Image (tube, rainbow, N blue to C red; front, side, top):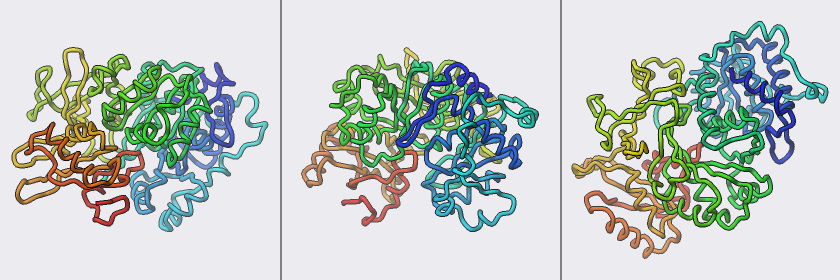
Length: 512
């Protein structure tokens, strides 16, 4: 069980930094002791095996101690996204049916609706009150009470966490991840990053995002520390934090990496301790990767690919290949099996594109309370159907062509937005690009490009158009271009393409 591994780490490395933020820090003995006492309080509140407990908080030491405490009770932790409006929170609570919600006072007031607050079957507790402990409770080595010990069943295939997807349309789905899922993915990631107890990591992604949760488990199960930074508004401050904390690891989505390069002074910074950075959650322009390699040649660049339903890791590109195969997502993680299937569900030959399906110990238990969608996603052989079209080469490296559902069919052409975005991002005038398909009576779907440009001169946009036509046939090129000062983002940092599609001309950030 996850909490048993944490206990072992706290025994072996009690004084190692576990968590730190701008105000305080906690070593592993502190974290373990806090989680034990909080778990006993949860047990006193009636939390039992399989009960859902919702967490509504920014990244914090208290929130992490609570997370580990929920697992000690063998409850199911459900992180809520503090960026979600109250009606969206209501929807998740209706689905998860928690017995308890633990939130900060601010988020209780701003995010929990009167409907939720009035429900007699749901207790709402204040995070700081629940997690407030006396110094004597944090010293020594805390032991689990007999009552809590007797309540444990110790099933590693039990659900540990439900991660709700942030789909742009439709009802969010609750991805159920087990103790086995998370322990397995932590081993994969820890091995890839060569994580040891003396390592540390700067976390800018929220813990309700699966990458953040994976990193939390990965670092803590290796006895390594995490520093929190909850704002990415000023990238220069993030770079300063990397310097001041001396962390050995950092990761983010392409938005984070681009912002650090363009506005954070990352390439010029003196970062002798930073051993690796990871890129996940989307395709990072090869130009950006080349800039990192040139500006910070001693830092390993790790590219990974996965889905929440796979805990989330599926493949990873070895840093040694970043200069020659930056457009690949790398080899399949050890312990996983992948296949590439045609429309009829038959395997395609090596080098030919098909839907990527994957099986192994990181594949989700299923969607919470949703057997119909679970059956669509995971077949009778236990294979997760990713919905991504991809192929594998003779070296075992995987190349993603794009989302099958996102594929644009325009005038008979099959166009993957990711391919056009890669071309646009190669233009020196483009800071970021997003391509979408719009219903059109003539084309079926019209290809449109949304851009953040280095400047707003009309000549700049014209140069981008010419650049695209130099690399792409006219039939496949965007038919319209829209410029933004900043893209709307989902909570996990990815560009919200649904907002791009539906945005009015006067939408915030829209400049043309």
